[in-house]
Length: 386
Image 1: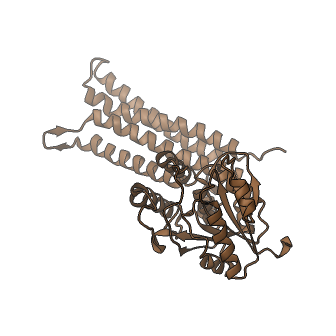
Image 2: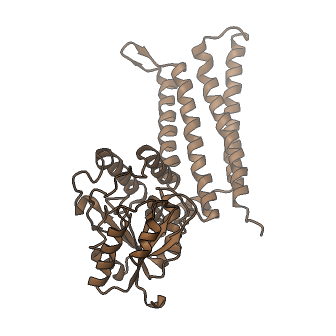
Image 3: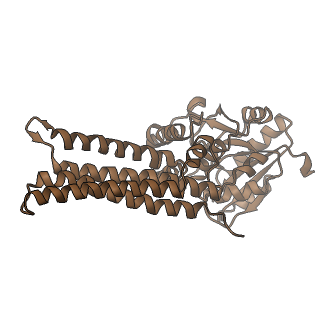
């Protein structure tokens, strides 16, 4: 077969799938034949010991041996060897319908970079998806993905999906485990690729052994990936909430000494609110530092709004703001000492003393942190010498 004429590569990761592999390959071959699509079937074998490789070759598939373990590793190894202009990937456990791939191919031919299957729209047969995955794991992680990245996809973790080989190479995927599925969608979205989804079905897999998927471990790996690649929700929004809430409530406590029912809110409350302000500031600082680092490393693309904000900040402005906060903290400290002096440096009521020393300490801590973060920011922005 002339590789230049191959339009579609169907890639299946495989680890001891002897029970179902032949069925998957035959369904994929039937699809190619029925629709007159020039294609190939690749089995990305991840170290099978149950004769899967021989079964794949006997059924006309091309076998790629992938030594590095993991779902993502297997797919990356198989896709790297694909000769088609388009690639459709799917598990080789006979849960996905390789016989009806027409919607994927149509969308790819229409110019979409990534075409996701949606099992919730196409239909999930009884027993095909564990209850916890169907009603908690998948919906929650898909919602988080849509919220964080504004991706118009209802089934974030469907394993049956298609993409152009050119788009895949631009994604530069590197994860090795189950989070590979999330990485693909996130990277495609961050790079502004054209995404869409089509209904697909999910059937109970045909294996007698337990699946490779580990519910809690792999669920956490997906969530971890989503959070790391969206510092806005990991750092910025929680930081603004904590810092804003802490600051506003601190003002209320300092000036009004509120009382709700029989509960008095005084300097003990003020101490914890000041900690909330400091922690919120650290979250916000880590957001901007992580953005600078991620942009420099090419982990995250440059966004115009964020770049505009970052352009206003430099070492000198950070130092100026930090020193200003330090001076404000010193002023409050001097006022507290003067108040103490007025009492002949004797014993002060805790409420009176801490009402100025806590805000003073908070300003000093944030000011010093801002000075240090500004220097670190400057270091991150220094061009790498090659």
